[in-house]
Image 1 (cartoon, rainbow, N blue to C red):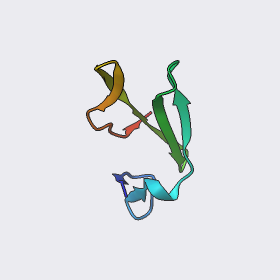
Image 2: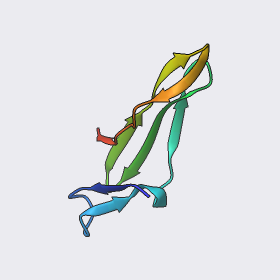
Image 3: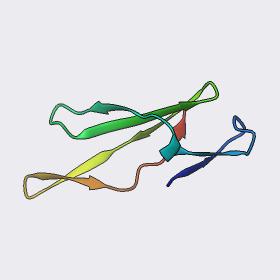
Length: 67
């Protein structure tokens, strides 16, 4: 579960697992972005990868950013 703290919710937080997500993919099929919307606002997290021995591995932990 990931919680976003925001003023667009009456409780001041949103559980991202409770919302529908939209996804975009890179040309190699890896996940590029995940987007969610709530209360007229949209948050996006962007995924980065590092090539290790010719294989794409996730690097870092993407954070939700309000657009």
